[in-house]
Amino acid sequence: MTWTLVIHGGAGKLDSEMVSPEQDAGARAGLSRALDAGSKVLADGGDALDAVEAAVRVLEDDPHFNSGRGAVFTHDGTLELDAAIMDGRTRAAGAVAAATATRNPVGLARAILDDGRHVFLAGKGADAFSLERDLPQADADWFATDERRRQFAEFQADGGGFDVDMKYGTVGAVACDTHGHVAAATSTGGVTGKRWGRIGDTPVIGAGTFADDRACAVSCTGSGEFFLRVGVGHEIAARVRLSDESLQVAADAVLAEVKALGGTGGVIVAGPDGDMAWGFNTVGMYRGRASSEGSRTVAIYANEPA
Image (cartoon, rainbow, N blue to C red; front, side):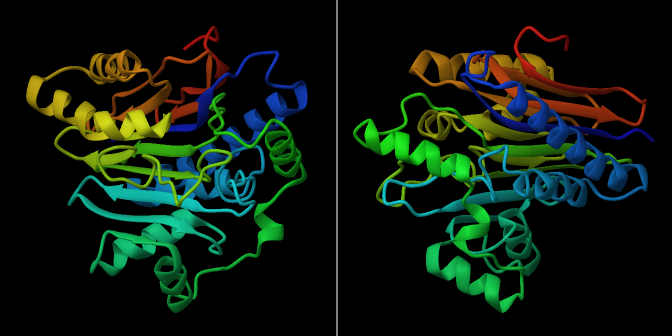
């Protein structure tokens, strides 16, 4: 039986002027390690759900991306972490918003899924649940990096407005395992300078994260307000399931709708037949994919080979 894995590390204004050689090399290495972690689970016959969690954990620990360690600062100089995970077999899901101390937010989302009583926890309640489950904790010094501090200082010097450049570093993974089941996971620190407890699409089931064995698994990155309005994850899955569109056609059509409303970003998609796709309407998206057939790709810029 075949398996597939697709990951992303965010989309946005990613070109040679925005991405330094060091960032380029570091991000590619991080994506490769995430592919290794998820691929090992799948190659050993493991579940797609475990594979996407494993891949996202690696990216959360990598300061090159905006999730977990390396998360961006809010307007008040704090850190608020969002994540979600979904199992395509049963459509069971777990999501967390505005968590502050769980080292791997995707692990907290997975604990919520496994507990089964709720789908979505936020803020102090999410932090309390994490402690009850004895999940590894970390303080602000773990999450905050010198580069994010520099960016936040620059943000403040520019007047402290919303990050209109939208340099997304959200991370995510989708997979199909050897049993034909799909899963998706996504994690983010949000947008630099976000205020009032703002929550984007990442932890919202059906928007930034969605998985359904009848269609596909989707993880998104982009301007969350627009992805929320379109319901991107569910919309792609619905087109695949109800209109029998291919993953690529469905992804491109929904991203076109996002763009028409004024939003930018990207998606990764995996189907229960082993098909996979990605799409983005920005100049770049940190991305990678691997399969049991031996194919493997890591890329950043739009003009790199598929």
